[in-house]
Image (cartoon, rainbow, N blue to C red; front, side, top):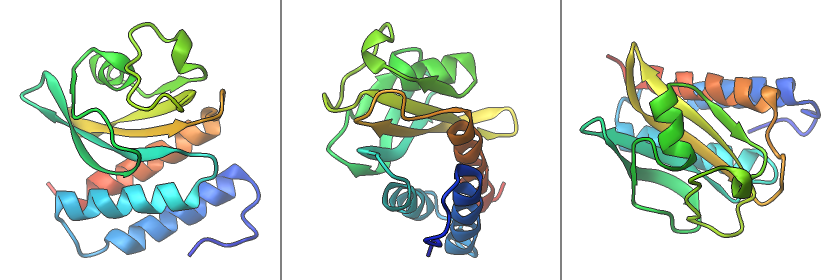
Length: 160
């Protein structure tokens, strides 16, 4: 699926975006597309121990969606932890050291860094795309930009 020659992050994310676009083409189901998106990210990006979705219910609670990795927290209040903070702030969060993040929710004690991207459909937040790594400082601005692009492809696949 992804080229073995994708040695730099922009190229890796370009190939990943192209693969995701093809994978989701013609399908509008939220669960099916979230499952395939999580699987593609988890198997394509190095040094992850979790990749998946939390979907916003009733504007105050994130509920676990499709993911790859160890079992995870099922419900997270909006505003709590990294995922809830990303929703409350309406912005992506790159956390180099989750142990230093106030109110971090440790679903997997092996996670050391995290990247959370809100899923915007217009002004409405559907939920978040969450990536965890066992390595500190795993995520950088290139990862944030690449994952935002993947999140946008996922949301676009759902239609309006």
